[in-house]
Image (cartoon, rainbow, N blue to C red; front, side):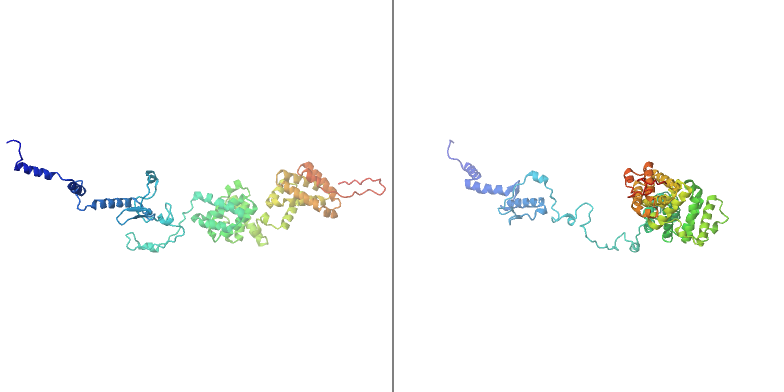
Length: 470
C-alpha cells in the first residue's frame, strides 16, 4: 500500500510516455522529414520537388516579364532552370526607377523587329519606294460586284456657275494681255467645264478689250481666232456678238467709241472666218438700236474697203515693241507734222500714247529737235518747244528719255550742220529756252556743243563778230 514499484498498468502508461518522447536522432530524422513533406497542410511526395517547383515558377514569371527584345543580351538558363547572366551567373541589380522609365514592351509579343519594317509613323503604309501589287478581286467576297471590273473612273469637273464665270475668266484674259500666249488660255479654259456658258467667253474678252489699248484689241482678235475650233464653235462666236450688239447702249456709257470698236471686231472676225459672211446680211432692216446700226455700218464699210485693198488683219495695228524701228520713226514724223498743222497738244499726246513705246520716246524728242533745226521760221521753234513742255508736264516723256533725245542731237549736230549751216546757233537758242521752260537740267544745258570759231564781218572790221539773227 505504500510507495513501491509501479504496477503493470502504470508500467504500460510509462511505456507509452517513453514512446511519445523521441530521442535526438529520431527528432532530427523524423520531424525534419515531416516538416519538408508538409507545407500549408499539403503533403509532398518527393523531398526536392518543392524546391524545383519554386525555381521553375520563378523562372516562368521572369520569362513572362522580360521582353523578347532582351532575348539576345546574354540571358540564359542553366539546365536546372537557374537563370544566369554573363559568366558568373549573377544578375545585376535593377532599380525601381529604371523600371518605371523603361519603355520596353512588357507584353512579351513580337520578335523585337521595328514596326512596319522601319517605315514608322502613324498612317504610313510602308517604307518609301515600296511597290504594291494590284489587289486581286476576291470573287467570294460578299461585297463583290461584277460591274466593278469594267468600271472606268474619271475626274468629273462640276459645271461653272454663272456667278463665278466672270470672276474666273477675267484674270485669265487680263493675264493674257501681258503674255499673249493663246495656247495657255486654251488650256486653262479646257480645264473648266464651261458648258452652255462658252458663248460668254468672246463677249467678256471684247468687253475688256474695249477699255484697253489698241495692242490689247489686236491680241483679243487673235485669241478669238485661235480659240474657235478648240474651245469655242462658230455658233458660240455668233451668239456672243449678238449679245454685244444688244448691250451696246450700256457699253457706250463706259466707252463712247464702243459702236465703232465693236464694228471693227466684227469685220476682223469675218475676215478671220470665225463669223460667216452672211452675218451682216441677217441684220439688214431689223436693227432699231442706233448704236448697233452704227457698229454694223462700220463693219460693212471696213469689209468693203478690204475688197479694195485694205488690210483688215492689221486693223488694230501692231504692239509698240513688235513694230519695226523704221515704221515707228515714220509714224512719229507724221505725228509731228500733223501737230504743226493743227497745234493740238492733247491730240499729239493721245497719238503718242497709242504708239505704246515709252522706251522709244527719245526718238520723238530727237525728231522734234531736228525738225526745229531744219525749219526756216519761228513758228516751228515755238510750237515744238511748247509741245515738249506739255509732254514733260503730263509725264508722257520721262527725264531719261528727254535727256537721251538731247544727247543724240548733240552727237549728230556736226553732220546736221553740213546741211544746215546755222544749226549750232539754233541749237544753242533752243537749249537755252528749254532750260528756261524747266524741262531740262543745267548740266544738260552745259553739254550743248558750240562752234570752234566765229566768222568775221570782213577783214577790216576791227575784230567785230557778225551778229546772227534768227
